[in-house]
Image 1 (tube, helix red, strand yellow):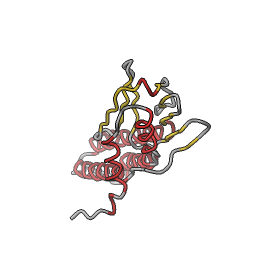
Image 2 (tube, rainbow, N blue to C red; image 1 turned 90 degrees about the vertical axis):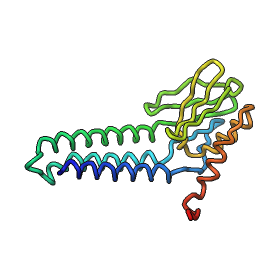
Image 3 (cartoon, rainbow, N blue to C red; image 1 turned 30 degrees about the horizontal axis):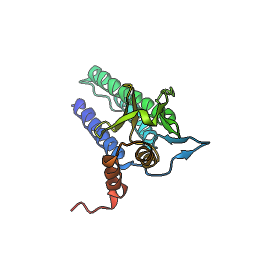
Length: 192
């Protein structure tokens, strides 16, 4: 019986996380430093990390607050697994918010991952293709030497980077531009 409650709460949490992710397209301005433009991760990662850690703590406390004498060991096991998964996901999202960045300047583009490790600078003329995975929320820049730069589409000021790609390379980012134009005022659109 209690397993159904755990599955219900997990489903509700996943739906809330997906809705939060869809709501948080950030078109605000990037951070300009000396000759380098920095696009930090959107605040969605911060908010999602708090939500995930809270849900994880809820699952860890669930067997203690609502004990079930019939399925006590099963409840402890299932709730502990779900709790740890959500807490680890929250920690990953928090690190992603703190360290994931996209940098570009006149010379080229580079990224830093969720651990703060920087990739190698890729000069603008060496970029040959831009791929976009809407399902994963990821943009991949392919260089002529086979190097891939992967970064999230949830960066503050991403339209500035799209403009830079179109200005400094022969690549076109029509899909990105259309997506961001649609998402700008999605909450104001009439669904009917």
